[in-house]
Each structure stands twice: as structure tokens, then as C-alpha cells.
Amino acid sequence: MLYKLIFSLSLLFLAGCMYPSENLTQNQISNDTQLQIVQQAVDQYQTDSGGMLPIITKESDTPLYQKYLIDFPLIRQQGLIETIPATAFENGGNYQYILVDVEENPTVKVIDLRLASEMREFEQRLRIYRDEHTYPPFGSQVAQNIYELNTDELNLGADPQVTSPYSGNMLPVYISSNGQLLVDYRMELYQALQEHDHNYEPGDDIRPILMEDHPIAPAYSIPFTVDEQGEPVFAPEIEESW
Image 1 (cartoon, rainbow, N blue to C red):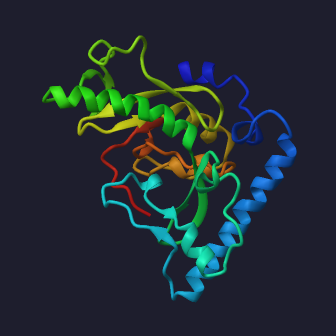
Image 2: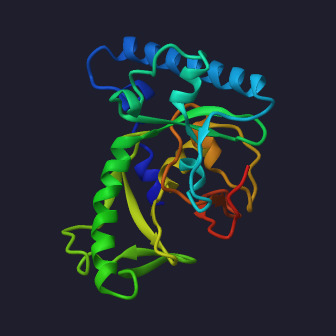
């Protein structure tokens, strides 16, 4: 099938995804160190505060993997970190540091803001369109409550895609029935399911498998699960939670 053909291509190493071409090994070591430093600061803050987390409050309807942004000024004020990581948005970097699994095991991950920048272009076009029309520009149905974008209505020359922060492959952008733009991570999920032992069953949210080997969270996504054949499918019916 299409996924198997696509995934016969080798994935880029994480270092290649996270940094420019020069000094990849050095930069990867530096980034791992930065992640560890931030994780230690978060753990210490949680211990000192009786279970609270150093996060910036976001709206309740914020997608799960964009919801818990780390509050760097707060942990610096507490003396738990000396400097904001060079890779962080707050210090001019390309990554937003977040927490995942906040209920059981708060873990530091990042959002690739280059993907976010690509998504903003489509969000702006959608916002302009919706200012003039009642309904979003739905195209063909992809899955239950998931649709392609009507490229003609949005004056797009081609189907919208963004660069995967995991492999560099181009990933489709779709729209949900409630007007939310989302990234189709099925290609990346298929590869991850092939590479890792797992016990996922239909009805499980399988997105965490993307973070097994990567510090990058699947931003702009809704839940995915596996079908009876074990292949990734959209699962908008799954409630997002940890």
C-alpha cells in the first residue's frame, strides 16, 4: 500500500531534524543536555511546590500537545535554571518547550515552530475565508469528521502540506468538521509502529509512539488509533487526555 512505499525511504536522524547541517553531533549533544536540564528543573519545581507544574495556562480547548507550555521565567525566578535553552523560542530558537503526560509522568518535549510557521499560513487563509463565509472550505471527506481543504476556495495552488519534524517528509493538512486544521501524521505513525514493539489496540491513542525516539511532540494533531489490521487511522472520537 501507499504507506509501505513511502516508508521504504530512510528517515532522517533526529539530529538532522533538529538542527542545520553544520555541527550536527555537537548540536544534538547540546540539545539533549538542554532537555535534561529543563526536565530536572521541572521535577524540582514540582517537588518544591507540592505537585504544581511550571506551566503557562492555556485555553481549555487548546490541543493536547500544545496545551502545557513551560513557564521559563517562573523556573528561572525560582533559581532552578540559569539560562533559557538556546533552542527555545524564548531565546530565539526554533522550539517551544512543553510538558506531556502531565497527570502521571510530566515529561519535557518540544514543538517544532517551523511546522507551526507553515501551519500559520494556512490558518491565515482559513481565517480570511471564514470572515466572508459561513462554513469552512470543506473538500472531500478523508475520514469521519475529517476533510480535505478546498484548494480553489482558499486560492492554494496545491493541496496543503507541511514538513514533518520527524523525517522531513511532506505531511497533508486537513480540516476537522469543527474547523480545526490538523496534520496527518499517519505516515510517521506507520513507520513508528513498524520500528517499535507495542501493545496498541483499536481505541488507543497511538501518538505517544512518535516520541519514543524523538523529543518532538505531534503538534496540530487529533488522536490516532490502529485499525483491525494494525495500521494507523484517525480517531476523532477518542477524548484527548492523559
